[in-house]
Length: 146
Image 1: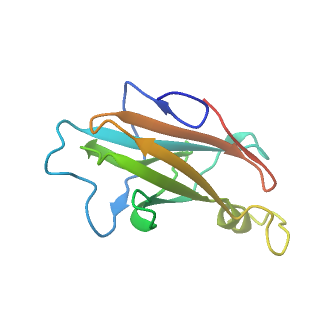
Image 2: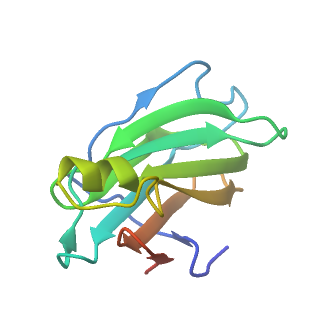
């Protein structure tokens, strides 16, 4: 599956922040090969990678939201959510905590902030796939890039 929301990549980006898995692992005993899910966040207010954005990963395959991972973007704005293991086929939601990112930088936000958490839903269909979710944002807008 390709498109503006996310695209498959044929390589692993090096130097990404690691992700801590929470609860049940994302590895299926029947899955073969290994895959990855990565993200890239860019702060359009300064025209640079967004260092320190927390991204929560939820499995939403069964209609419930179950947190299965978390990562924080590095100085290049990149984060590894799942790396080097088989992916479980299903629907997931990445939640980019952009409100907290801007608050830590002292950026004036409304009360409440116009954008606080940006949710992106994706479907992983290949256990050995390489998926990348790129995003550019401000306190008032966001877009997928790629």
